[in-house]
Length: 560
Image (spheres, rainbow, N blue to C red):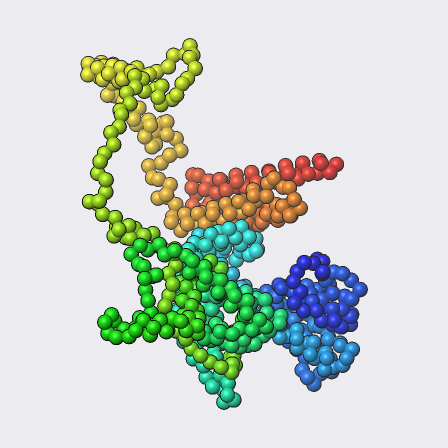
């Protein structure tokens, strides 16, 4: 595995020993790797999802070490040996430790979600659960092989589940509901929950983009959200935004979105928003025109109203965002980060701009309101009837003249009339039928137990075999068919991985025959049934073994 690939490298720590060998430690997006200084490939590479925990050496110990413990029970220890001294080595070790503290929970939650999905699939589908017990628990095949073929079913199940769930909207006051607390030093603390962060990301995609750019590479979680609360998003009365601020380009994007919303034409003919005016008093109750326009000409008030409307518009649009953006932010190391800010201001919008996209039902109701049946044109246009001499030429189009005889609709009608006439004139002649004695004799020979019905019995097989044995046969059939599906899916064998899989599946079928089928056959023999109930399963296995033997013979002949 190449060490310097196109993978995103989050951190590189030099002078890290492993088993007394000098090297470098690389922390990437999905794994951590250690490379010997003179090589270009990773000597050790561990996925974050495979790491169970990390341990550090105590301060009383001379060596500065970090140990990674895996889920499979293995472990590896890295010794930080910075030439600048012990303090520099401890700093390098703590940097790696802090980054692992942020990354490991993210991949641990992903692993837990996969296990929960598999567990839910086993609970919802008893047949799959029975297959899992018969094949995986009994040791016939591994869990990875079982779930590899179920990946498509899992994805379909996940998509069906996500489509069935109702999308939860975003509260318009989710920012105003954040209640700051004083920290005793002329500052404020804001307690953010995962739901609030999710609402911010759904409402303001630009903030989510900034979070991905800055955290954790340039800023920590607390520093990022501190700057957010100091920005125009939380202080809507801010009119002067410096270009040096992190969210300055977000403000420009917000202004562009506001302009785009203003330029949109409202499609509701029953509402005229342009005719509205900022009038706080009714007509005839005093107040001059200059007083009425004083509020609208205030630049600060106009800016605040525009931002209120933009916030309400983004809240409405949050429901239309792809479900991928509505997932809980998994990159957070803690669910309730505590943030400190020097200022606070809560705002709540009162105006909302209308989204141009409307539900179909609303449009239908709107059409009912503005369309009146008595105003519709009731005049009917006259049409000309098409008279055809032969319908076949119109339906089938021009056809070449052929010497063959074909049936027309007139022939069909004439034939139907002839059959009706024949049935009307038909006379019953009992002299040409079989005698009653012969009929009874033939019926007895064709009945169960007769001379022509050897091997049958008055009692049906399903009543002869106990229900427990029937369930056991059904279970073993399903398990065998699942294994055979894996086996036959390997053909044609066109890659090295398929060759390894077909050999492994042949061995699995042999284990199934010895561990499952043979004991079942021996238990059935105690009942002395006339039929071989396991014969079909043995034929299926024989066909699979013959296919494998033929494939091996062809493979050996090609090599020779």
